Length: 266
Image (cartoon, rainbow, N blue to C red; front, side):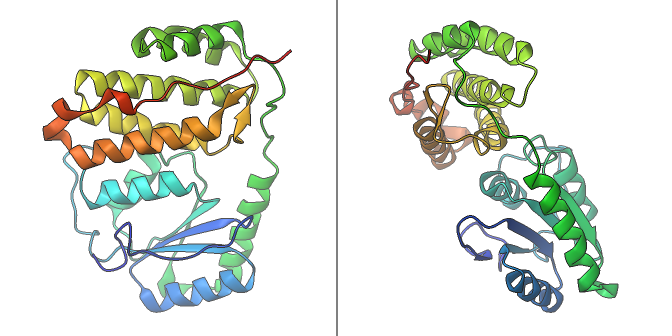
């Protein structure tokens, strides 16, 4: 699919730099924008959308198979600082999907038109979005877990993913700070694993996609929870699901789900 496949998209990655995810079918203008972004010390990931612009969705949001699902999964996994969308060459279906999918709609999105582009203005707008994102309050990972969250983790580790939902949701509702994203991540992955056990491919894939945005915000250790290991295992389970596909869920191996590693903080 040209540059729109997961292994074929063009990107330039250096650590600790904002990632700008660019969508366009105008290869020449996209190359110019990429060069300017690199000059300004941004990481860039490009998707050429020419081969997916004509796809019409049967469902309005969250496809779980096909090239549009690959696009959403790539964005959700990379968690770019901003998605830059060429409104002139990207279809309304893709625009609508990015703004409606729970996996991507909270990511900052900047729309421009390549046929009349002022790259200096586009760069100013991108810089503004990046600076705003950098000012967002981070999570305080030094506090202990809420008792409800601890109960949910224990149920999770006992393989009772459905029962873990209620106390984890209660912890999420009780927490009023950005720290609640920790509980939302645990909650959504727990529900995803419940769907895995029930053979619900679409439900499991959707919840794992949604959880990426919360897991991406967290350091490897938070409130005593080994988030790095938890995140890695969620990716492994997702890869297993995608390999199986929706028609082979009976072969899902629950042994691939690892318990949550944690320690109690004072």
